[in-house]
Length: 579
Image (cartoon, rainbow, N blue to C red):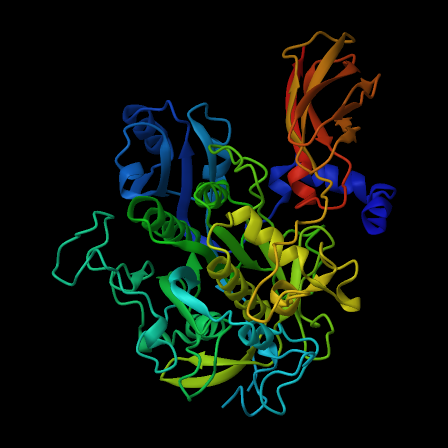
């Protein structure tokens, strides 16, 4: 909070305003050459889409969405091959009335740092607890682990009726410590037919969106990272070999989209849509998607996919990133997305489904590489020297926020099994509301603490084997600017109103005082409003136009409050013409 207030009090605000107003100042992150993703407005027909693509030498590569959404005759999102530079195409289409958004097809990477069996030998510190009460064999004590072993002590070991999607590299489905927990599609037997009608033939254990086939494990690709993540979520427990995951029993669905050179945003979107379709049309109980990867700038297409999954009760767990940056000021995607705000084509979900995870080491310190953020990162979890399964039926120790994230995904699945009637919002609230205070995370994440399965499952006066009522999440203060709407056009020297729509996305009543910064002219009044949780308000600023003809751009921002998911999501612009 103090950091954010000091930011507003310095000249850096002017720099941020200039950066936000000038799209050309934002460099393109690595992306697929000659490819963009275009989101068309819902009322746009096929003929109009074709005219738009022709204007940029575009050729349709694929439509994005579920099979049913891809067959829609209007609107939709498309992956397009274009002629010429991507930056030029973005500039040409950004003001096209048929286009809701256009963006590069970013390249993303997994977020791990590699270094060198197992629970009984003292190697799986991320599963350990403080042994109060005593649990586990000798040598399995660490007060900064997730304390999964104490949850196991009280009978919480998971169930195969709970599913977790792993959006990552592939998973070695035959690994002896994973095979029993790898999902097998009950509705699509291997017969060369798409029996479940989702557009993917014989998707037995999931789908490979990188290679466009049913084989989710490719030894030539390595698939070490995805297999490692899977082992932390659901390495088989009690089988006397290797490691154990947070869940002894769970169903792991592979949604492979990463390879040795990373993966594309369009493939990640397909993976999210695939998992959503499994839940909505086939009743597969998918509680969460694990996303141990990152890269690129904000994508409305990816945000749309996350929002649609959230509306079906699927939580989106994401690695905060390994750059050592403050995500409050330098957003890292996908962890900085929020489902409390809409995308260009999809409304907000009504609750926060994203959980951003930082990494701590075995001494409870924030890992030197881990990104952090007092409002944009939610919780810390073990992420340094994490032993788990890897390809080739082997084991290895990795570090990264990639390794912290599956500890949280595993906890969500464990809790969902213990409380089968809990909603996605309640599950998220229980995990975050029971975080263990950790000094290294004070001011570094929203909960100021680390994952604690002991706090989540430890009985107080209840007999052993019972579990507590979910702890509600702490109050959140979160205000967003939704739109800036000046009158257009306006006369020289005239005094007009500029509408700024804001929403209180927090959990209590808030007095909102947005800031309006014009590129020319003078703001004459600065209104405020007191609005209840979830409500919106439109505030009218009085503005005097400049004395000469020109285009004027307005930047509006909300005060950055405790709980805000993303500083930059609260910067919105509008424009008018003075004549």
